[in-house]
Length: 537
Image 1 (cartoon, rainbow, N blue to C red):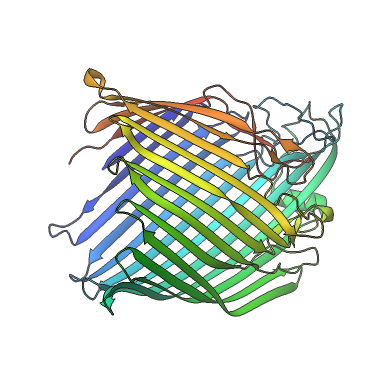
Image 2 (image 1 turned 60 degrees about the vertical axis):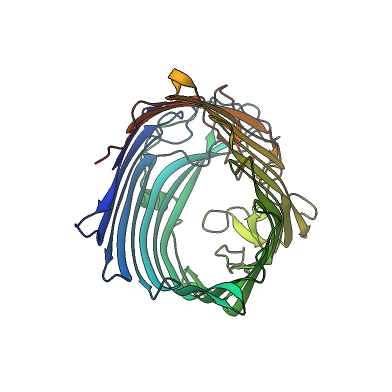
């Protein structure tokens, strides 16, 4: 059993209980229960969140070789959130609002209810071969009624519109997966195989409405406009969208791993998929079907030494999309190729792990917001296929205990994305919120001698600038420092104090930033105290 409690800035409190173990003397029946309660206000005025997560699972050994498992989880969340953040000035300039600024109304509210049930059966034929059947069912409901503000904003603060939005989204997901896996030796080579079949189904029932009111000023946001619900918003605007998705996927898959030599491993596999997509709205249904699409994967791993290996991999991409174009049709699936080459190894007698990878993804038909069409798709942006895009770069990581008591982690990513072929954005950046350079560092030191129960840590995350999704302005890069002090009071009881954003850096989080909205501040300086108790029962 583990009990974890936390308390931090903005009245942030949490308590988690995680208990599990055998439920009978033979140990053939095992259970686990997790209860997680979390509630918090925010650095943003009026905003708050309360969330409860429950999880329970049982595993039972029906025979020595057959295990049945069931699990159920529930998420219950209630909040007063802020939606779409802040607008910008019409020339792209930062309005520089206080980070506590709330753009919603006191009647902003959101609910999330999610229940997941899963079950599986595993049968071990022998030490080498096994069969597994797993199923999952998820029901989820998301509702929100909220005020948002949009621009762009004129120099005197005018130009702001209020939007009243109501959302009621219901979804059901069902899935089955069946596989046989095993390892064997043939032709003098060690081999592993997995073959299986999968089925999934997603259905939704969605309601969406909004109403606009002009004449606001960013320097005098009204948080107490008349109370609204989804029906009152629909009645005021005359706009009440009802829509649904019906998405079904079937597939057969397999992987094969073989070692022709002690140093060389070859991996191959693929999936054959069948996809049926349907979208219904305003009395009409749009469908899309793909049959027998094969998606291969190949990889090679070569052991250079006992501690170092090199690898390369190639896979194709076929990813159906649910986004719609201005004419109401579903976008074509994403297609493309993924390539990666890298090395992994150990240093200092295995205490330090390192990796270096070079990657390239060439995709076409990826969905992007169609800003020229405005809010023409159920009150939001339609989408369009972007043409051919490329993402490529380098990832490097090193982590481990470099000297006694000192653990270091360093990670660096260089990534560029651009349109290779597009009628509007040829040669431009594709993923506008992906920085070209990103560096992550963290060090943790366990003090020596009489102070060996104390550990101190510090780190930094830094990234270069990005551009807005509407390509109208740049978002500055930023550097955020964090620190931590830990204390192991007893083998069962520990304390941790985290100080985040040590220097209180004010910055915008890269996202779907536009002149009109979706500009969010990162969290100001804040603290979190965590207490962990793991009694030995």
